[in-house]
Image (spheres, protein in one colour):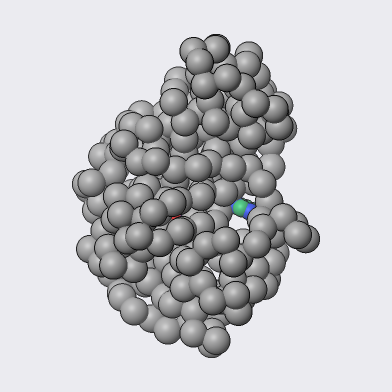
Amino acid sequence: MMIRRIASSHAERRIADEPAQLEPWLQRMVDFVVAETTPITLPYVPEITLRLAPESVPLWTKIENELGPGPGPPYWAFAWVGGLALARYLIDHPALVAGHRVLDFASGSGLTAIAAAKAGAAHVLATDIDPLAVVALSLNADANGAAIQASAIDVLAEGAFDPASVDVVLAGDAFYDPTFAPRALAFLERCRVAGCDVLVGDPGRASLPVDRLKRISVQAVPVTLGFQYVAAAADDELHAASVWRWVE
Ligand SMILES: C[S@@+](CC[C@H](N)C(=O)[O-])C[C@H]1O[C@@H](n2cnc3c(N)ncnc32)[C@H](O)[C@@H]1O
C-alpha cells in the first residue's frame, strides 16, 4: 500500500515492505481522512474517484482540534476547478505525459497526478507541503489503481528538487494565493528553463502569469462550491477554466 511508502520517506527510515503496521501517528492521519471524507466519482472526470469533504472550515477546525495545527486549510479535500480542467485534458490527450516522468506540484487530493498516471506516465511524483494531503492523495491513488510516489518535501526550498529529474510538471490551481503565487511562478520558471513541459490548470486568477503562458484549452467545468467540486448535495454550476502551457 502506498501509505507505507510515505511512512518510510517521512520518517526517513526504511520500513520493511512486510506487513508491519503503520506507525501510530500515520494511522491516525489515515483514519482521520477516511472518517471525514466520502469517495466521490467526479462527474467531469468520471475516470477518477476522490475522497472529498463537504466544506472547508468545519473540517479545518476538526483537524486543528484532533491533529493539531497544520500548514493551512484542507485544500486536499476538494477537487479544484483548474485541476479538474487539467485532469480532463491529460486523460483526453495522453501523449502529453505518456512514457514521461511527471511532477505534480501542489497536488492536494492527487487529482492531476492520478490523471497523469492513468494517461500512461512512466513515473509520477506528487508533492504537497500539507502532510494530510500526502495521506489523502496516497489513499486516492490506491483507490484509483494509480502508481504515484507521494511526498511532503517542499520542492520550493533551495536545493530540494532537481527539475532535470522530470520531463513534465503539472500545476492544478497553484495560483490561488497571491503570496504563494510568486514562489510558484519562480519554481515553474526554473522547471521550464530546465526543459520541462510545464502545464497549468487555472480559472484565470489574478496572480496567473498569463504573459508566460499559452492557453491550449478552455473548458466549462462543473463545480459545486466556489472554485471547487465538493462532497455536498449541491447543484453543479459551470465555471470556466483553462489549461495553459509555459512558453517563456
Ligand atoms: C488550490 S489547492 C490545488 C490542489 C490540486 N492541485 C487541485 O487542483 O485540486 C493548492 C495546493 O497547494 C498546496 N501547497 C501550498 N504550498 C505548497 C508548496 N510550497 N509546495 C507544494 N504544495 C503547496 C496546498 O497545500 C494545496 O493542497
